[in-house]
Amino acid sequence: MNATSYLRAASTARTRNAVRAGALGAAMAGFILAASPAHADRVEKHFAVQNKPKITVRNSSGRIQVKAWTKSEVLVAWTNAGGKSVVETELAGNRVEVAAQAGEDGNSTDGSKTDFEITVPVESELSVRTDSGNVTVDSVHGDMTFDTVGANLQLTDVNGYMVVKTIDGSLVCNRCSGKLEANSISGNVQMIQPSLDSVRVQTSSGNILFDGSFSSRGIYIMKNFSGTIEVHFSSSDSFDVAANSLKGDVINQASFKPDTHGTPRPASKWGHGFFGTMNEGHAKVELSSFSGTIKILKRD
Amino acid sequence: MVCEQFERILEQQDDDTLPKPALDHLETCEACRALSADFYAIHDMALELGAEGIAPPERVWISLRNQLEAEGLIYGDLQAAPQPVYNSGPGWWTVFQRPAVAGAFLGIVLAAASAVSYLSNFPQTAVQSEATLQQETSSVPSADSVFKEEVLTVGNDSIPGLQRQDTAVSDSIRRNLQIVDNFIAICEKNVREQPDNQMAREYLYGAYQQKAELLATAMNRSMTGGLQ
Picture 1 (tube, rainbow over the protein chains, first blue to last red):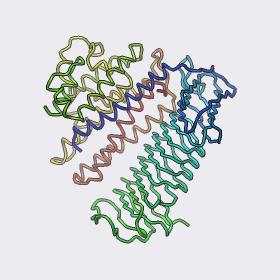
Picture 2: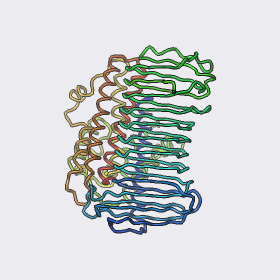
Picture 3: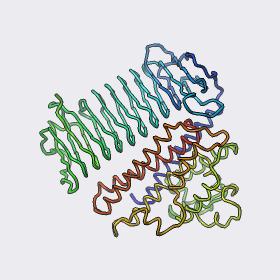
Picture 4: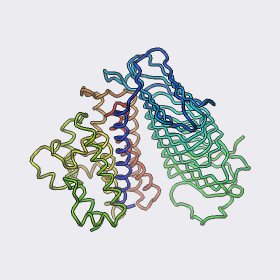
């Protein structure tokens, strides 16, 4: 990629993000909102929705718990122990927006920490943005985006296209299915018993763990700078693997045969790594690290 | 007209009318059409947002402008204007005074500067240390350092209406900037030692990109108090 194309790509991505951010800000300012005063007690709001509503949550600090139920209704409950934040909610069509904002003194400190409990229909789309505080999502099926600074994220029994962007928050994905894209700088990423058929995970200094089966049509790309990438496999799994660590080690417990389909690739003269195939080589697994250790371990 | 010329005209333009050669180019070049649309969208959005928003201190814009001019990323028309840059009328520069736009532009500048700096030295010569290069070519503080300073201090400024940033968030951003800076230093060293190592080069690009994204996020979070 030359400098001009790099500039152009960066320009396009950045400007679009800025436009989106600006548009969202302007839209939020124009909303006719049902604003609730700061409250130390629990406040609840109910919103009747149809199939597959979209729920957007904006919070700066505090816990966000999202779980599913079978009702066609979204329940938003919150507590603001410090009493310094204002929670605004909106129902527009099949879209529910929830935003916690710091009070008039402008402080976004402990006083404006807002904890949310949100219950949504099983089939729902989610968009969550928060800075700090943990986010948990249980049993929701639908596309999801998460944008956090330091908030940790735990997804359990979720299904959909999940996009996670965090600076140093961790991601734990328990029994997730669908597709996962996650980017972090120092957060760890764990995928436990996943049924994911597309994984693109990148973290700089965090660790990555994948402990599950590889779908026959799956593509799994895991990359970090330092830290450990650990992949657990069973002897019945079928995948091609390319693993390479420029400065770190690659520890492999699998008996791979040479890649029988695809273009033969010469071994890299830099770092440690290998290519190989397990059984028929249906899934594609790419593991890459700059100075971290890559472990390909047999599951007990 | 080629795309580079078009970009230059787009940057220098002070009103909404492009010269005919540029308009002709637009009709035939999809990429430039998209770029132009993005610029106009930013411009319109900035105007819509009005003048009541919070602008960073003057010295940021002055330093940034000096640096951008020194790097050849903006050109003479702006330089010739007698008034201070933060008050330079309807030109593109006004657009960059909006926080979201500034964050986005910062990302572009950093990515471009990093890529250009790197590519200009590779592969003919070994990659020169970024710090050494800056010392040799410019006495103006780098855009990177100016913005980093502002990102890390703006949360403590008592600007009316600007929300103070959560300490944990500031700490997190500081810590991760340090991590990314370290990675960049390691990657640069590696590329200098092994210029034909494609993997090291890819990691270096990735680290630059990550830094630009992190700074844009930091600006965004800082200016909006965590919400937008």
